[in-house]
Amino acid sequence: MSFLRELDPIAGEPTKIPCIGGFAVTQHYGSSRTTVDLDVIDVAPIASRNRLLEAGGKVLL
Image (cartoon, rainbow, N blue to C red):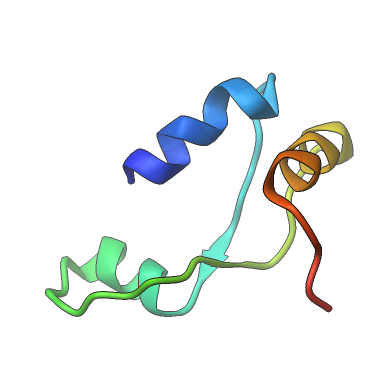
């Protein structure tokens, strides 16, 4: 979760980042399974998404 906290100042405003996959299962159910990625559906608002993409690199479609 520290990774997501590091994104706060980059997003610059309240931002929704709906997570799916292994990370979501680990966080919701407290599983000991580890994961090295974060799968998201979309990021809103668009201005936050653009700032995060610019800071993080390329979009994989």
